[in-house]
Image (cartoon, helix red, strand yellow):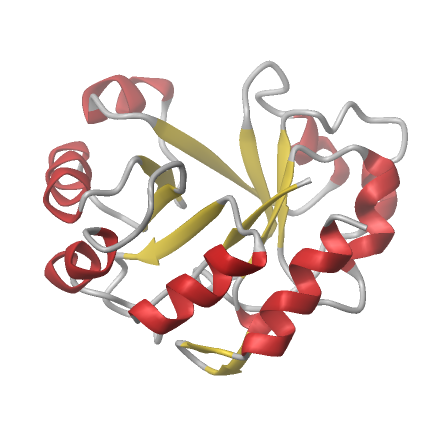
Length: 195
């Protein structure tokens, strides 16, 4: 499974994740999040990263123009759209995007089955709630284009391997405090995801 470590706010955490084997890093451009980072600060981190690491920009309630502009300014390579939009919205972003499905019921995980998408537990507030989805929903479902998020940590990620998810996304499950990663938890999470 591919692993994304989200909520990166500093260079040290970025390198801990990369050196542990993360495939992608997430940068939160949602000002109300405790993991928010400015495009300028993200750019300073991204400029120092090695090649072949996906840099994912997370957005909530932004315009297509702002999403594209922030991605270009920061050096991110993919925009993760964490709010409900129509298909037209993505064509206006004019940048590689990843749709997020905030699932409230089993039927929700079957939406957009022909495209790669991130599936997270529905929550009134956006991002990093640590709320876990009902994993039984995924039994018998083709999970090869699903990136699973929500309530994951080093103790439960290995139990997902048999489902065949494309990837997993973790933020609060590997933190020492909001916006600061726990190096051992990051290492353990990636090791378990690849076990």
